[in-house]
Length: 127
Image (cartoon, rainbow, N blue to C red):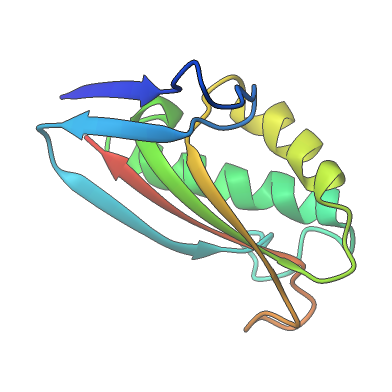
């Protein structure tokens, strides 16, 4: 499997995301929306930072279970409850995720399907 991060010189270069990701070969893993839910079913906290950190940890555990890592992730869809500071979420993401910029989409939503959730992250990985 080969993954190439596409960041044309004519576009903004961000340390947080890639403009596009080209994935060649391999299997595709679709990770359903992850909230800041702990193993015991409780929310990791009531801040965007705490919940984002846990959502990313959950994604890393899923990847680990199929012998993959954040290097395999090519796309993320991130939904955040309106009124939250996205910079807080991005800082938490980089703390857990490291320097593995994927293609991302952000949406601000009124609420999420899990009571008290402030963030939900879906991911697509090529393994």
